[in-house]
Image (cartoon, rainbow, N blue to C red):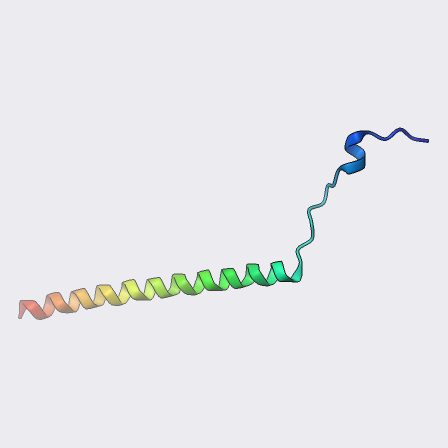
Length: 60
């Protein structure tokens, strides 16, 4: 019989497989982050436009 090493018996070269719940969670987090980024960009753009509008109206 072949002699087994301690590292041979309990080693696992492959990572655990991603479950469907993990996959769903990962996808939803990415979607949520993407939506938040778009929302922040839109808010910044609107804020800048408002400040420019207020600056122009106060000059008149």
